[in-house]
Image 1 (cartoon, rainbow, N blue to C red):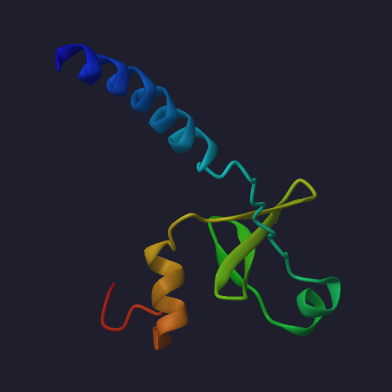
Image 2 (cartoon, helix red, strand yellow):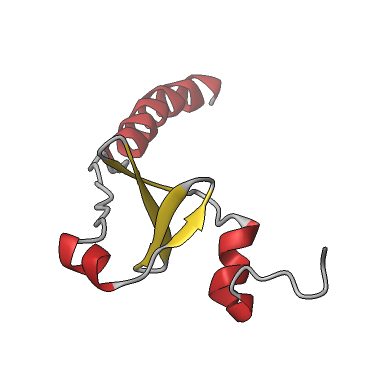
Amino acid sequence: MNRIAKIMLAAIVPLAAMTAISSHSTTAEAQVIVYPSDAYVASYRPVYYNGYAHYYYNNHWYYRDHGYWHGYAAEPGYLHGYRGGWGGRRYGWR
């Protein structure tokens, strides 16, 4: 009985390993980032933050630095407040 179990185990383990490896998907998925167009930049008033003109486009903030577009992984508090309606104004603060 012990010999039969060893033979079965020797056959099942490699088949299970091959099945697990072959069922893994290795397709690559690209993330497409679309920056504001020149027409959008010319049409909307920017929000100035850290010395750069920022544009809210497709639910993200973008700014240009040395000819390249940049964005934020997490929305800065100032820009979130501006988008949220207070416009970056500090009422009652001096």
